[in-house]
Image 1: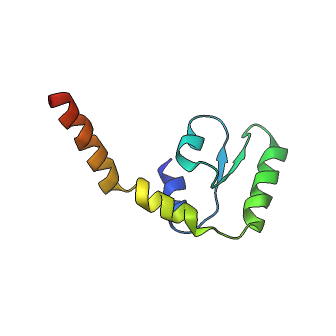
Image 2: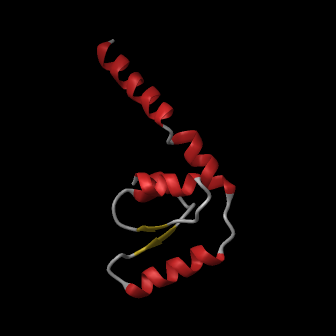
Amino acid sequence: GLSSLEAGACGCNLVISKFGDSSDYFKDFTEYCDPGSVDSIKFAILNAFQRPFDETLSNFILKNYTWQEAAKKTLKVYEGILA
């Protein structure tokens, strides 16, 4: 959620559950794990720890998921409904 967006924007590599819609937001920029599997969590954390941070993730988040972008998209939907 928001904590992952904030961490990614601040330069952290991420480990996120592979369930839900996280991949819609984070694409291939993060490590995914099965939260019910200790081995999966361990593998994802080690991969994220060993990988250098790629600024592409931070740039992607700052371009697409700021409060300003969310407001623009919300306004566009409202304008479409009212038209």
